[in-house]
Image (cartoon, rainbow, N blue to C red; front, side, top):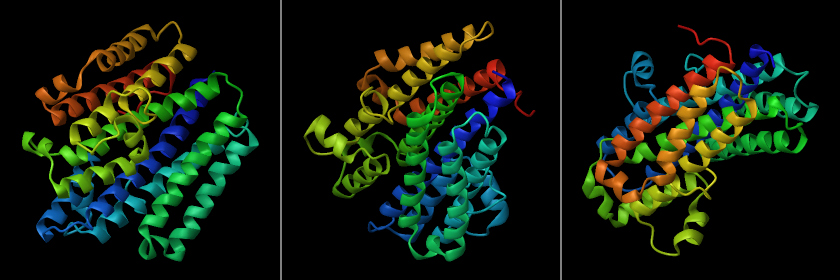
Length: 314
């Protein structure tokens, strides 16, 4: 497969997944904002969200204060923010348009319709009227895109590059969603409080894992178990373990003579997750662990680009 074609497919999937996960992060922050807290605490939560998404410098250059309205505007519709939901869905559609001949009609029409509907919904004021409804729409369109891809595309290299992009982006964003909670936190948070329970329940719902948690643990929600579910449980679809396992499997399907080092790098990361324990992770510090994981996922993405895709811009 041509590197340019693989690049478009890979980034179409990454941008679609990124839009969904940005919606998930914003949604969980909106839910936790309903809990009793000071204005200072609310601002810190919004700033933590910008920080973990690496958007703080761009936001501060454009806005004088950090509040819900401005953060939503910047992370949802701002065209100057390449990671805003609007920018992501636009980039996903443009990448799909560039390889229309490689996609099935259903996959292309899903991407194109998503872009058209997004522009219409934003113009109609859905974000201001009901942000939660808009975020649910973004998640639904991402689910639809994945379902149509799995249900209609031939399982060849095109399919595997799409899946590779999806799971690399998902691993990155699951780690960021977890880290939003732990950003700047320390050990005493693991003891939990009544208010903390609602924070963790919101996080579980943000990754569609609330019912899954109940089935897996059948007990009260504790931070350590939430972290275990989203990091080490291979049977949880959005866990770091499940995502990296899928990355390894899809890399195997598209491997070439230049990709052996990248496969080994991915395999080591997969092994670390398989043979780590939650006790070891918590003893080290969850924030530090997630920070290192994000660095490794970023390096893995760079290696995939080097071996299979177009060179990254300097």
